[in-house]
Image (cartoon, rainbow, N blue to C red; front, side, top):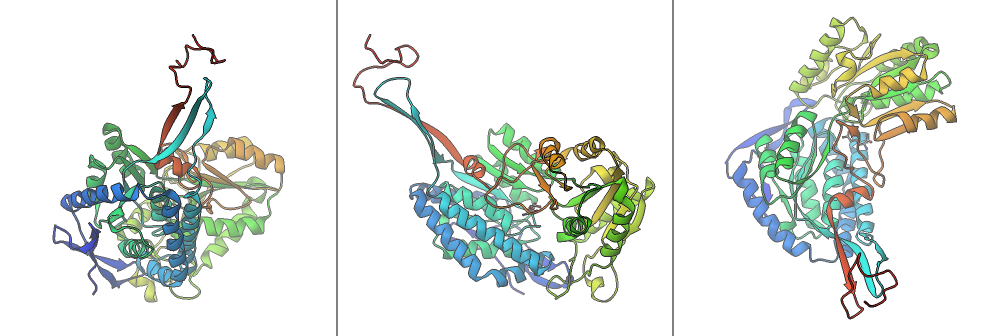
Length: 498
Ligand code: UN1
């Protein structure tokens, strides 16, 4: 079995703790991907000290040249796409077409980052005074702490690190302990592309590593994607220490299928939205609101289609749905199935561990649909992060929108309709960071901002131009070339001498 190391101070090194953990394939527990460092605070301290040196060097490299490194990262990811998808599926389970899509998101993010190296713009505006220039420009911040989840093991680290790097920051990267192999290969690729070694530090491990990064006084900017509970702790620490923080947390995303919808399209959409990535996306479709007139027909077709999905190893042809990430998350899904049944929701399919043949070797769970769910019930309100869909019904637009908006999260929403007025009304009134029309709740693109309102986040966005603002300071420069003292707000606009 291969033993992997951290990448700290320009070298692949063992953790100071001397401890390791095993990373297993969730589709087959007997397949161990490798041993990875269970690092501690001392490792993080060394990583941050080195990243500070990396920052001193990298922040002086011209931004277009920094972008060129990211372009080479994009080229290498493209060359190694199939190999990466395979190792990602092996360590986290989602089918190959999904892990290939995950790599493609990384490639898109890399090429977008490369172009942004030439576009880190500020503004030049007229000064209040004659013979004076007024302008803003962007500067790097320092060492960025990057803490990422398992479900998009490549894309999400790239969403954070590529813009951070183009802006001139150094990164200390802690991938989720479920996907350390993907994290390690991504760092190898970044180094091969020419990133100076001390600019990237990879520290594997569990919560202690994340905490040490967040609490380190020399890490002024932190980006975290994960659970709302952990995000709250990260937020408290960053607030106390006056750090810049981007949080991307839970979702309870609804798809509304209206009476005039193309039902074939909506059916495909909900299957992909609810059961893709085994429901383990913060953008997963976990609620379905059906118009009364289409409710019965659509639901019966949906249940048949969900029963027909093929569960299995994501590396095998024909697999639609892979396993959950580990046993704890399967237990959590089971608890929510009990909670749904206790309040009298109708369990129409699934609700159990998938068993038989090779399914016994992994953390599989059947695609699960609850009907007759009512707004406010726990399965309708709380993020389950598994293949569980709650179905509600109404014939009132106001009620459908109120259901969508009646949760503490606000990531994405979806409406299937052919009514253009209703579609635009939905974009205005659904309280989410992203609203899709005639598409499911997933499918964000790299060059527009990604994130949510309410307790999904803290107001920042990933992707698009917005993330470049997050990873840079806005500096303002005034140049007075009049050769005399001109007093802003005191001397007059015509610039006449006193
Ligand atoms: C996430 O679930 O954390 O739009 C991110 C999507 C993907 C990203 C999801 N491109 O669903």
